[in-house]
Image (cartoon, rainbow over all chains, first blue to last red; front, side, top):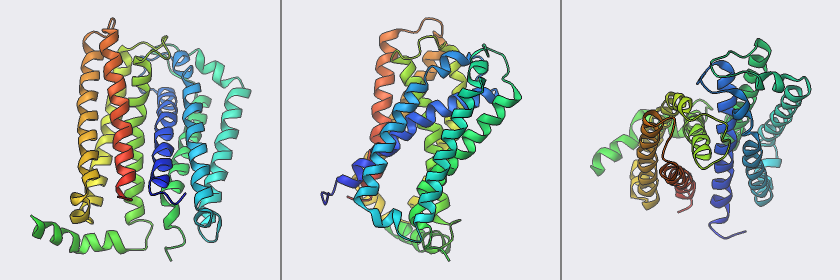
Length: 149
Length: 155
């Protein structure tokens, strides 16, 4: 744990996992907004297991980072940013459950090349992007919270 | 050169960026650097994963439309990266991992250009083995750039 490469190794994996996860999230959400309209939504959404794999890598490396330095994440005042990040992740989960449970995911599967997604799909995609970028913001700026007046 | 770098580091803007406790100073630049990374490495990874054989139902040609997103991300990262370099120029430029990171980034950009050209040209029937190699190299270079960036602070 005191090995010098321990922390930067998990940080690297945390960001590599994020790149895989956010790549799929961006591709699906931006497609719903009409970017790269030539892409049919169904095969794009088939990439979701890759997003889950990226998330798993980030989750495990993140947990190891917290375990290596619990003070930085769980002690006041930095813990507020940390808990806010966890809260955003829970909300992302709820948004995803909503997406699948309401049949919206299936509806988007039917969006073929060149077709537009529904307004409700766009709302869920906006919530997804807003929450994910909040997660990233809180993660990046976490060490600075509480330092600021 | 060292004189210029030292001046850059001690300029009023650099000291503000580095020392201001405001979340709008250094943390904001770091956040932008990460947002840029997400927009660059993210879609680039999706394209690589597709070229390596995942999601075969996904047509290759329209993936080319993701490149404007990738380039916007690249420039966000480049500008925010330059700002962070300015406040810490003498230390960062002396760090071999910084040079390594720049080599990985340059290689990633070159590979992106090649992948885009391939998608544009033979979109319907791209040479599968060439696409796989480009995708594999691209994934390695992005991971290398990320690793070099992370390890820089500990080296």
